[in-house]
Length: 242
Image (cartoon, rainbow, N blue to C red; front, side):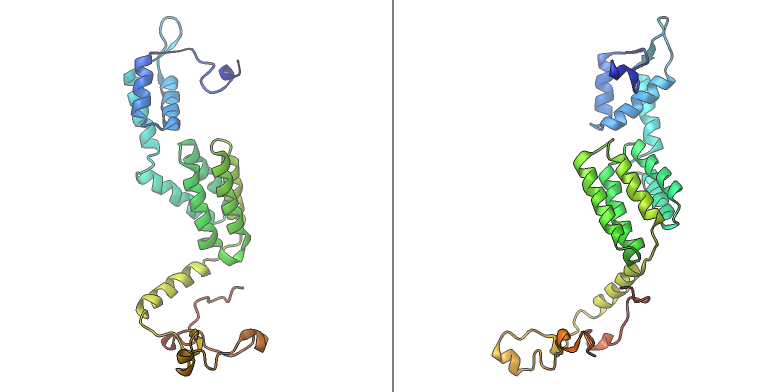
């Protein structure tokens, strides 16, 4: 009885086994795509003399094409919508962020894909401005993994709203990009001798580890260079986030 109260259960539908088989094959095993196409077919289908909505292969094919155009997981619209979500989060617009999240989930996007993007956003665009953002995003991913759709949609909504309302900082992201560029240009730069490990007597005789200042012995206020010589004094974190 409950099945008739939700979804398409209240509609009188006429659909043959061959049409259902065609729908299953054409959906490539994606149940949500199949349901979206079926729902669209029922909404646009004509009724016969008995009042039943007739769903045939032609109507199913047209519905699949329309639903595919609305959201193609591997096409431009997929990337356009995830871009819209990212930009809305960055702009701290919680309502718009929720909307673009919904566009993806209702269209059948993998919730774990969305959750992964939110984990990345937590570090790239929130970063140390709110270190709890990463914890929230990872917890959201784990929860989505545990319970799946449709139950996890509200969990993603919680993470999206939290991230949208967070104070933002991309200092970590820009610092990493600048550091990565320096690393590629200084791969042959030797480790400063006072920072080198000296597990053997020979290495100690060569001066490895000599003059190294053990931070706890100096109250963590020692003056000491930790970068290669060519990068001495280099600062990647411009705002000195802690």
